[in-house]
Length: 379
Image (cartoon, rainbow, N blue to C red; front, side, top):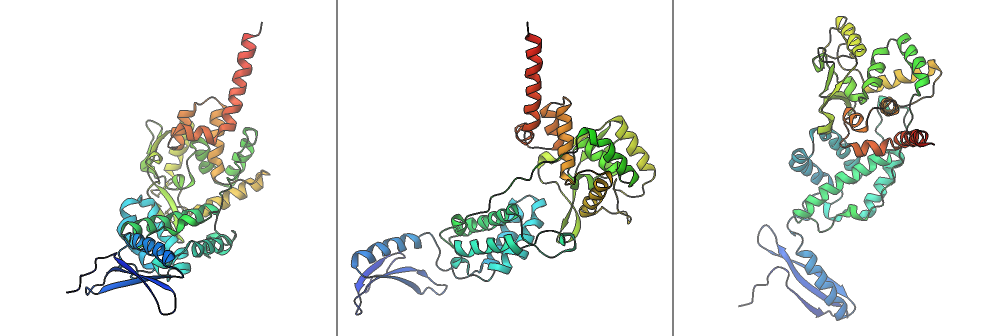
């Protein structure tokens, strides 16, 4: 009776065409039938080496699974069975958008075990030049995705490929061979102290004073500011509780949880800010502090447009909404607020990160301290 060959066993023979062939058992199908694979070479030594590598590679994968999934199918499985459990809820919609709008249209039909680094590299190149989805809020933006977004997409694919390796569907992660675009840090802009009066005066004339005043006073992120509700304000103790954010996901304005645990924080506000909010409360019928005409949350894009109009009318340089947050941090540090306090108010994960981000401010303060000590010690 012939010996039953175990998975991974192989033999070598010389074919009639003069080439050498190495044949090995790669596993069994769903009906128990043996699955054979082979390698070819010009010499016996070459085939022996190829066969050794093929058998070792075969041990990493389950041959019955390798042909069952396309990239698109596997990304759906990964998202439903892994991503939703391990990734924070605020990232779910973002990841789903990456899969539906960018990954599936380009490589969704590619067999999972055939996906190569070159295919990914070509997709990333395309996304950088014309990957942006056509939406109203992005009509004036570049057609390509940012380097940061492309890197995020690569990370999503890489995480899904790692799970496929764990499940023995593929043996290697194709993202490992990709060259990713470098992220160019956007230059930080702030509103100088001497221009604040002109900015706030024009904001008041435009009817948006309270929004920009509060952001400059607290350093809140745009989404956090728009997600602020009256129930989040402790008027008695002058504290704002940051509990949610407003985002636009797939063209829809949504109330979302915050991205990190450090983002959930309490920010003290001045007596002036408390009085301003009390006055606003008497005229509001919405749950949101800054509400749209219908009472719901304001679109993140509209506050950007408002900011640009105010800056233009005030004759000031155009900046991003996020730069108001930088303005708060810079002014606070320049006026003696310690780095740990500023870091906590911003919701950063560490004071070290805040220190790195605003090194130019702290370096200037240290220089002033050195000059002060020089004057004190001068004989």
